[in-house]
Amino acid sequence: MQEDHQRIQKDILDKLKDTLETTTSQLERVISDSHSEDINAPLEAKRLKYVFKKEKLEKSVSDLESWQRIFDPTWFLIMTVASPIVDQKLETAKYQDGNGIVGNSAHTSVAAARLRSAREQHPNPSGIFKSAENLNQSAIFKIPASTVLTGQRNDTGQCVILDPTPQIQHEAELPALSKRVRDLARKLMNADPDEFGLLLCKGVIKNKDPYVDSVVGFTFVFEVPIGFSQPRSLKGLIAESTHHHSLSRRLKIAKDLARSINYLHMFGYVHKNIRPANIIVFKDQESDMGTAFLVGFEDVRPEDGRSQTGGDDDLEKNIYRHPSRQGIQPRSYYVVQHDIYSLGVCLLEIGLWRPLKGILEGISPRMFGESSDEPDRPSVKSRLLYHAREILPSYMGSNYAKIIETCLTCLDPGNQNFGDETALQDEDGIMVGVRYIEKILEKLEMINI
Image 1 (tube, one colour):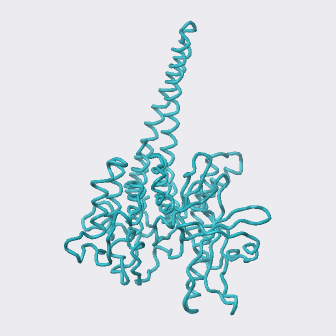
Image 2: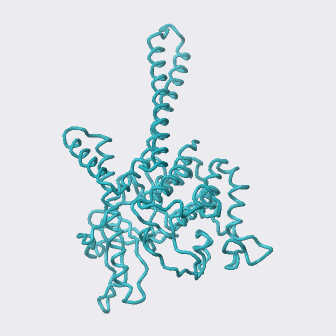
Image 3: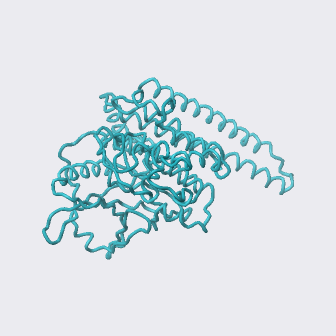
């Protein structure tokens, strides 16, 4: 591991040591108190003592679970290192799992192997493209305020998420798009929703023009995880301003999104289109607003691939783009930090729980970029930073607001977190991953309600 990766790994292991020592001390006190408990004590006193013990133990369990969520990304980051030592250790882990070492260690090693496999290049993957016949037997529904659809089989009731790419305009575009879709689908077939916050891809359907029988686009087919139902777009949820979701639920959605982006980057891809319309929230056993997943992979590309410099003048999309990527002719090629900026904009919207388009009322194309062409109106980025610094802390606290400021300034000159792009370039993308874990994931996880 590189020096910074070693440092963050050691810091997290030190936190585990402290957490375990605290938990052990609390358990010893509970056992000691149980042995010395006065059987003649009033019932009410016993109940209060039990409640106190229960809260302490639940806090210990919560601390360990929180530590696990911080540790996992640093552990999986090792899977991005191009070293035969990693492959050897994974083989050893799989051998041990087959000889009785099961449970969480087995699950983690399998997930690690999947991430490792997703980083590798397989020139001729098979089984990616599926027949459209299954969709012909399904009821298709549009998810409001979203870029994706749901499909439900008429015979079994099984549900899937359908994520279509835009139709190609010229036949010459097909080979490059087909390869990009195929490679991404293979990687997402290695996704573990529990570990990586990305939906498991079941394959890709080729969309054909019925008149000339030629492929005009593709549709990713994603499995709906067990126990999840009623997918809705984050954009649609936020638009329901009359429904106020709890602070803890909004914070969980923020953490889910940050985790999804982190693992997409570990898979070796940038998303390029992170916005609430591309974030799906499922109902789970705990809440109508349960778990969020990133979708909308129409523009995604390998992080080491050269992006197209063309853009568009869609105001709603440009709100979520870094100033250097806004407009019809973006000024820079796409890098990982552009995704981080878009994450910051989405986290701001989640924190305020108001559509940003309403907050930025009166925006025009001339207000995009680092500085506005309209002297009496600040740029979109400046207005977002103002809301993050001055308005958001009263909604979500100063720690959450600071994370968003870190994201929005990630490419500013002199920024010590992400700004120096050349200092973060390395063969395996480790440095950006370490900074992302340290400055965003870890700090989000440390926020407790």
